[in-house]
Image (cartoon, rainbow, N blue to C red; front, side, top):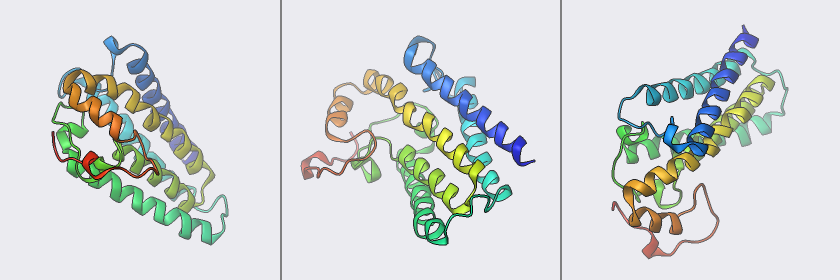
Amino acid sequence: MGLTLFYVTLAAEVLITVSVIVSIVLPQRRIWPPPRPRSWKGTLTWLLFVTSGAGTVCLGVVDWGSLALAPWIRFAVGAPLWCAGNVLAMWAMAVLGIASSFGEEGQLVRRGPYRFSRNPQYVGFIAALVGWAFVASSGLTLVASLVGTVPLVLVPFAEEPWLAARLGAAYEEYRRTVPRFISVRKQRHDDLGSIH
């Protein structure tokens, strides 16, 4: 059961990665962001992301403890990463809105976690995946988590040209002042706007 779940999860992650690469390299044939609201491409992308995420969580349960990581790594490193990542991703989704999170056009959001990262949902999901692998102390989960981060790192490169074409100068200004993922540099207060 564990290996079947592992292969299904990896297959979903590889398919997402391929679809994101196609979207970057061939934007006229892009899969993400979807060309139309509620298109099959958007539905397929989210189905693959859900399969990947749920598969990784289930792998952690099925393969629990196979790495025998030290408890301090599991609970002092993994648990905070997992919890903070989930909180950040859900907060970002709530601020951006469900429709925009699912690839529909919306306004540029520069409040909440979007003041500090252009992609806080992806940052949160990456932290949660890695944190869960540590908490579960699972080799299969660690591999699935690392493979699952690849499309999360790549997807902004598919989204940014799409956002620039739709939001214009406001997005270009936002891109200049807010990092793609995270940054340790201090931002000026006037860089932190609300909704444009």
